[in-house]
Image 1: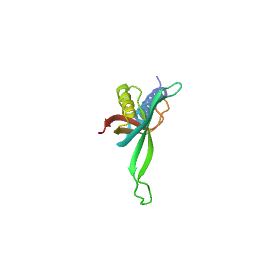
Image 2: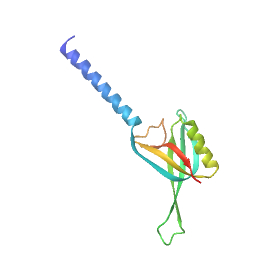
Image 3: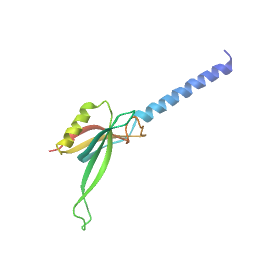
Image 4: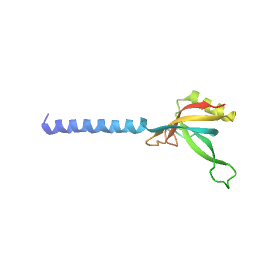
Length: 129
């Protein structure tokens, strides 16, 4: 094997390894973690080829505007990994019971369409009294 072929082979192996590492990192690494509190208003399974679980949380708050009627709401959208069936059932039950919940989530660096419609993935749910 000539030096050029050996160098080319080593270079290609390094490039493929770096691309694989970058792909794994962008798919699995989290940018941030956090939690949000509110009521779940929607849970759905979407997709034609890749089925994803999507949801919406009504994040309730109190307005600091004295002219406001008091409540301010905003909708926060999230995704759930497909293999987390027990978590999906907990989310659906909390929505049916109209319970306030705390949702723990991870924000991913990138959104991949086969994984979910958002970068926010629920990792845990707590039902509040």
